[in-house]
Image 1 (cartoon, rainbow, N blue to C red):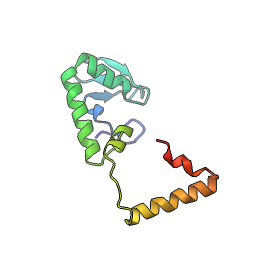
Image 2: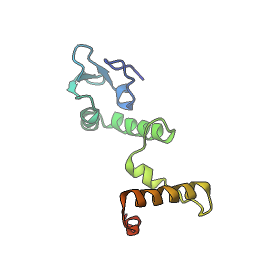
Image 3: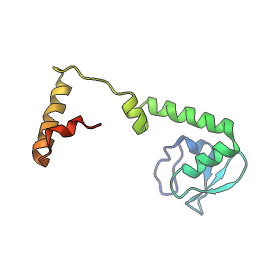
Amino acid sequence: MSDGANGKRSRSVIWEYYQKDPEAPTKAKCMKCGDKLQHSMNTSNLFKHLSKQHPLEYESALKNREATVKTGYLQPTIYQAFHNRESYARDSWRAKLLDKCLVNMLAADMQPASIVEDE
């Protein structure tokens, strides 16, 4: 992955398709068609351009992003985090730790026990 203008590492797979403009830190040039796009320090516009103008590259970027998340490199989306959840055995150390933390939260915040029944 390339370095950004501010020295931070560019983590998104989208940067395989764009080149950052060193003179305008919020602009990027599409390496496929040469369009210059405003990215405002996030990648939404860049993904949108790829999806509308270069659908094959967009599909490739999505697959690469999914593969990157599965390898643990990036934080998963909320959907992925809940979709890949697992249940702990009641006597496992993890279940006991979570139960203890939950009781502490209920007591510290003076919450009703019924709060854990909500989704």
